[in-house]
Image (cartoon, rainbow, N blue to C red):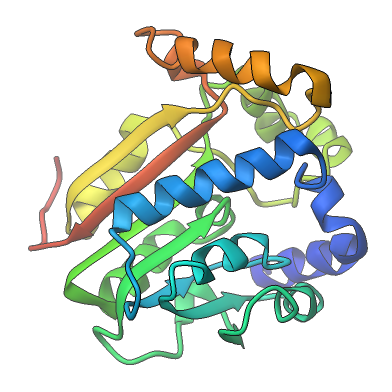
Length: 243
């Protein structure tokens, strides 16, 4: 079962998760900061908002979201990871599935996360995200881009995925495909924008120049489509069928 495979994977990597996810390097820390800023901006998070984080992992992103002074509820399916997350923020940390959120309808002003949607049963997760959002609520996630050459290889060649610490069921997203799924789920103003050419293994001395080059590449039509990630966002709206 998918849930148990994901939990077992997280259990195995819990002690070294930030290394596996590329978060322990200078480049990795800068990626966390940039992704968090993009998510916060996309959702318009301000003090006092009720914010649900799905797939909080070790809590690195939770600590960034908590700095907005929003009321943060951080969730994950892994008890081992949640023990780390609890040390990163003073919000509420809840063990639960994204596909079965234990919250009432219209409970949150924003739903956020990093690199989590591609682990989930997406149709069920999107239904739950929409259900718990307020009428004017927004969501934002940063996710792997399938058009990135590395992502395409490790998401589709299983033994490479295993070498890179991938879980058995995770994938990546094509921007046009996730947009179609968001529209079908009934979200308004969906967006899936490629970004990020800074790899976690970039040496500290090269981070500055890679950031400059990456910023330039993100502005070049065609080239930007091969960036490593997508910022995916939208709002709650009337249900739309099809395109």
